[in-house]
Image (cartoon, rainbow, N blue to C red):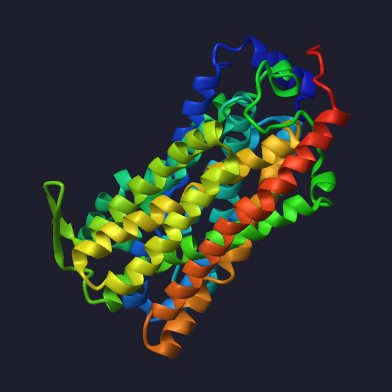
Length: 436
């Protein structure tokens, strides 16, 4: 099958009734909701898998690391293909791989098979994630923070609707049936919606009518971007923030069990649920809401100022969770604070990359920075090692909090002046182009 030319893709986008920013945003959000459980629902399966095969939590969690590494480190390649050929086929193939991955999980009777499924899921989810974020950045040049935040919210909060059904299905029918049922459904939805994604008009990407505050019109290729110190500052900050968040995502269930509060009933906002189930549900909701909220805020007060506020919030939340989390009610509330202060990295950093390096190569550039999540995932298994050696999670929490607070300070004292200088130089070198 011959790939469509760039001109064909652009003509198709300009004539389709689906070529509307909000329509494209909604399609992207739904796709993100469908792949969210591959990451955020994983923690519910760790215990049942270990109970059936006794492989050990640490060995099972290697699958989570494989998933995150491949989900992130291949996004630049997938982003290049999206920038070259459009968003459709990467999303369609990604949806198919996600469905196949959970189908294999439902049959996996060995660790290598579990790891293979994690690899397929990571490749598929990364393709869908990177494509939808890149498309949102291009369709909304003057509201990148909000657009990226709404799209990323689908991934962050998408699993909130299914946490309770998945947990109930695991108890009623077993984790294998649950993997198969949700895997097939999620994969089919993404496969179908992928055909509806389009690229925006060239004029919107190259010469938008308005840019976000602090954004430049410079269009940097990925190879040019990675040669700048500012990219590596953002990369280091992303790793610092992602480490603590991924640790919470992967280890929240084991932490709740070690705190001996996982099954303790908690009553809040008129609901009564076991502490772990309540925490997982609220965490997903707040993890999703924070992405458009902080993205919208950054469109108005600046990316770095917003980073400082959000990163500090998470750092303080982690410290409080470490010291007060043995109380079931506080465990639910404080875990929500941690997730609310973490999820915004998936809207702030993509928006900052596009502000700084342009949208012509937005998907590939944002994908390169997104690999920092994969780097952080390599550190997640060490949380189990540290907690086992020290006999508690306190040291793990303190290290994660320190990384968050360092990143908050770097946003103001390092990233902000560097990006201001870079943007000024690029604006002087690249005056506003006229649309074709």
